[in-house]
Length: 182
Image (cartoon, rainbow, N blue to C red; front, side):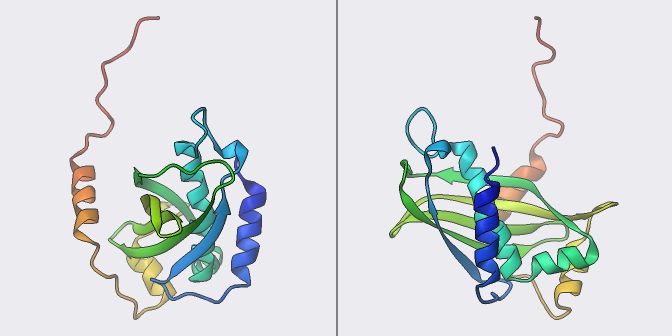
């Protein structure tokens, strides 16, 4: 089940925090709960992606994006992700999540998120987000102009650009082995 109560709590908490600049970093504290784990007694990989919501949406609120989305009746959706898991997070372990916007291209906004125990990074994800309306994806130039007409995107890191190039080469729809017999 989606962690609605945790999300409400994090959104309420972020509402009371100072506004961040567009490229600022939102830090949030979390605990790996028993319902977040898998059979190997560690944070489930799928749940990890859900927990990243608990940092990404408060970040959007603190940078003023949530207000902008509401004003224009826009939505926000994940259009892709690249995830790296490196250290286990066990039940009841406390960890910090760091979330920040790293830039955008013509269609998507890119958010870098990571989970930390002390000075050790346990995992990192880059999310490709699309702002949407009834007609589909809203161009980021339109979103940026509504946010601040003077704002410019920084260059995306080379490794993010490499990921994006690989995504462009990836076939869609995916090639499969064809129908299977039942």
